[in-house]
Amino acid sequence: MQVLWNGLVEALRLLAGGDSDLLQITLRSLWVSGLALLVAVVVGVPLGGLLALRHFRGRRFAVAAVNTGMAAPPVVVGLLVALFLTRSGPFGDLALLYTNWAMVMAQVVIALPIVIGLSLAALQQLEEGFRQQIEALGAGRFQAFLLQLREIRVALLATVMAAFGAVISEVGAVMMVGGNIRGQTQVLTGAIVQETRIGRFASAIALAIVLMVLAFGTNLALTFIQQHGRRRA
Amino acid sequence: MSASAASDRPVLEARDLRVARDGRVLAAADDLRLAGGRVHVLLGANGAGKSTLLRALNGLEPAEGELSFDGRRVVTAADRLALRRRTAAVFQKAHLLGTTVAGNVESGLRLRGVRRQVARRRAAAALELLEIAHLAHRRPANLSGGEAQRVSIARALAVDPEVLFFDEPMSSLDPPTREALTRDLSAIFSRSQMAVVWVTHDRDEALAVADVVSFLEDGRVVQSGRAADVFAHPATTSFAAFLGLDAYLVGTIVNGSDGMTRLVMPGGLELMCGEAADGPAVACLPPEDVVLFTRPPAAHSASLRNLLPGRVREVRPSGRLLLVTVAAAGMEVAALVTRAAFDDLGLAVGGEVIAAFKASAVHPIPRHERRLAGPDGGRT
Image 1 (cartoon, one colour):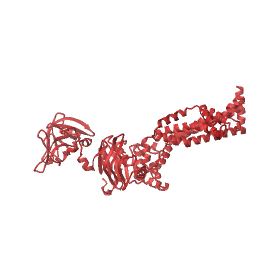
Image 2 (cartoon, chains in turn cyan, brown):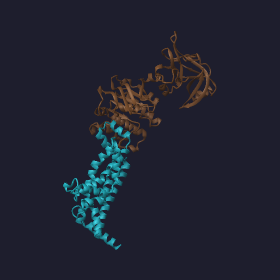
Image 3 (cartoon, each protein chain N blue to C red):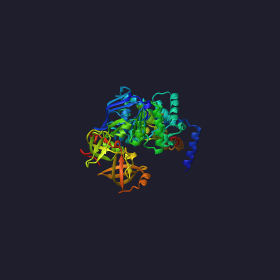
Image 4 (cartoon, rainbow over the protein chains, first blue to last red):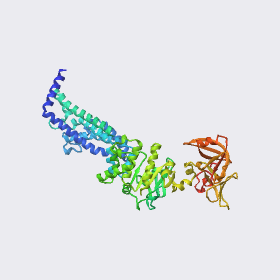
């Protein structure tokens, strides 16, 4: 119990003092996960729209693949990305393994099925008659898609938050493809693992507090926006 | 209804237009012309293909055949979008966007590239027109069904459409709301040059708004014409049944030298009827045109040329009236009477009664249009 208490006090001291390592790791985490999220949303939402609104051969298989992808274990994703980026792999020449870019790529692979799957489900909740009404209002194909996204904006926000939660708290894939190199590719989750392993509990607790604040903050913002959206709907 | 603003130049024309899926024709119109200033009702039972035809006419659904808007053929998806941008549609559900009422009414204009300031001004005018300006800042979740539908109609009118498509816009509203909205719309249409296509399965609604009626059955337009003519002379027995004229009289039309047309029944009974060519025929008799007496009517009722003595077989409610079925001369004739008249006459099932009706109340249906089974098919 004493260990926990001392750790907590030391952690608060680190946080209050603006420890430079802690700040650097936090910013790196936000950068990697933020960029991965951005890519996943920019690519995933239109793909979700494609699967929700268009009928084509192989659509069912694609939807099944997305749903499976949503439950893919991060370590498996890490393994796959590592196989692609390793020196003898197809993209080995790019020398991306153990860089921040590799971690972004792994997190994109983790976030993408979540973004596609949840935006697909939200778009399918809209009635066919609603889509017909939008077209009758004179919307072109792209305008109609944007209007539908506006209708599902609360669900889209939930999608973004869910994907962010998944990547910011993920540890297996980033450690496998980033290497958890201190000062270079170490993010919050990897740092917590390492600090715990070497017995620096205060530092680990401080990192955990930051991670929890990010995760809780995300959920809190989501809840607030959802309830606000419900009142205005 | 809106003859003052009517123009004969068709805005939208359909020739041999058909929507088919898996080899089955869902909706077809051989020759349909929509003129400005007129309300064209597409009437028919559920599943008759009315809404599918409306979607094809509005460019929401690709169709085979020829569709022309303002003299130009509508062929490609771009043509259909161009058509939709000069027309508007209101559906059974209001389908409002998740923004304010004002934002909804502006939306059609904004999608068509109208500047925000102009859109705002035109939306305000449309809200005034539908008498819902006070709802401008409300959100759809806080509107009643009638208010939401008014917003949807205001949104459609705001774009100043050349053709306005209505797909059963009243069917989810309660009767007083429906009547008020129908009255307001009739006034708006009478001042407008736009063509209106109004889909409904409600014959009373059709009667209230239509200038032109097309009746659809099994996906096809089976009769089209001026509303008054179409309702007075249904061309098929199924349309007659749809209009509530389900008492068919089967016999032979004979045009006499006295200038009168008679329907001679198999038992020899002769009924004076509306004009028709000689030969076997089925005729229908609207129950609202049949008057019941317990004694032969007085001389002032001489225009009631057909008098059929019989007995009351069945009495059942029909809205606020009673539908009385009379068995007379081997056939059945139905009459709509008020409850007060029923009581005054002292009618009862089995009691003697005289069914009287004018010659013009008996509408012969051309033989080639009959849909009943067999050469002499029909109910008498």
